[in-house]
Length: 311
Ligand code: UTP
Image (cartoon, rainbow, N blue to C red; front, side, top):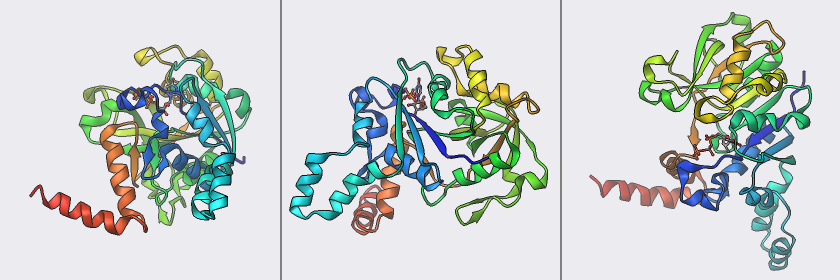
């Protein structure tokens, strides 16, 4: 099995980030000087996923345009000899083979993934949420891809969250796996503990803390068996009246010997930002700007003084 396709749903309404997202897709909000979605496409390409399908919607033209060439701008930069900016402007157009499909109405993440069925075909594929940013220094997709190839099943990324936050996520019920299943995986140069690789036996979307099977939250990276499409076609609207990917994954998890091959999880212990959430968005900008070679020194100096002014 060789996994080469990524699906990035960006058709949601972005209500948590209103009013900015009234006209600007949340995936286009800049994180320092690049839109959030560019980091996500970069992550897919870095994991060897060079066929990238963006699931867009009516208000998301800016996303499509961003990944297209901009001849007038490029000519102007070329004429000025501004080659660094020219390279930055061209970068998004060169990252991967990009495809687009429209989700007519935002009927939920599960429905957005179902819109990718014809493009994906009968192969395993990755799903990356367009507003969920995984720090490039802490990659998790390569390990998830390796685990899907090893098991033939689907794989979700899991994050340990405090009990009072689990209601914001899908919560996973998990079991240990045998040491062969969990061995030899890494996040960048950091080995993943075999205990951080689990079998998912159940999933509940946004449960109350007392109903959550664990504090392991599903975050926006998935490697999915194509069997998910059949399940999604039968999945009724769930929480919030939306077709939930979590509900389809729960059905796959409940049938580990079925055509989907079960669902596995990898606990993610790196840096991650939900740029669809205002507070997390601000953290992402500060963190990534602080770490940049060009902006970091001046920004950190200023930030230190700013923080000290509160003391
Ligand atoms: P979210 O729930 O984070 O996105 O969905 P949202 O609905 O845009 O956000 P809020 O809650 O209203 O602020 C996770 C991902 O799934 C996509 C979103 O674009 C986001 O990347 N999505 C969601 C779709 O593509 N289609 C949908 O119908 C729903």
